Image 1 (cartoon, rainbow, N blue to C red):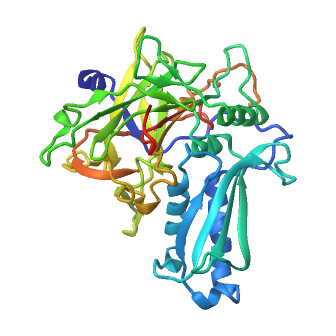
Image 2 (image 1 turned 60 degrees about the vertical axis):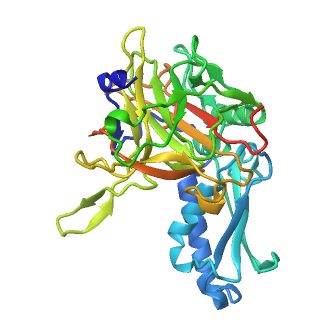
Length: 410
């Protein structure tokens, strides 16, 4: 397992270029998650300073942001974390008022996104008795197919056949809608543990679990005692049973013999690379700024084989000599994970991996057209290197695995 990993070394990516993409005239304006959340936070900050009712309180606490459409969705931690980071100066857990909200996947009622399925986020303020405070509310629509798919935790392939054009915005939106309504997944042929998309086998994700490593654990034995878990199909999703106090990790596979791939991993919406990343850049004036990594890369697969990389914890640093370069993925009791009390609305944990295909210089993406809770466990030592890789703009595939179910995995 580790021999394969070292032979086909995977890497972190600092920057990846937005590749081949031409937008059709009929496409609505781009409304990605990050941009819409920034806009939401701007409106909230403005209201806290100018609204006659809210400005009297000066501070607020962040309550629940729930999705009541499905018990299998848990994107709340990502939304809450963005609110906490951006609106930090207004947040006080002892405040008498709270910012609460809902997120849903519905057909848009706006002119921009008419006829398309979107992720709608609505936030309001409530008093200590749960009554809406004043008339302020903030609503945003997210229409990025990748962002919607990640939030919904679906497993989906956007891959086109070799003789076809890349899927259009409308086609991608429909694919996500179908995957949300009728979830499914596949397994790599001959494997019982490698989860892939229903229609493809270029990429796969495998969950391994085992005992928590000792405090003196090094790179060589991080995965000692860990074994692959066969997923259980439940309500169309892939579930893996991981008990309280158990550590787990990922094996990411690339079966494509032509192209490298970038993989972004999110756990309950939280970025596994940047949530605890301490790496910074220092400019000529000594000013520091955080380094944000785009994802892990895997090289193209050898003939009749695969490239494999193990991801064993939340990244802390890429410094070569760091003895504590990552923190184990450990399942804690409800309310004790990385996302704290917001770890899950329903108790379900969702692992999502996005795969971005390498865009080689002078080459188009596949297709011939031009349309273009997991907690922080023991510190461990990893061996990583940083590289640059150009990828296509949108993910080729998204694979999601549930790792917890309060009603049992039957």
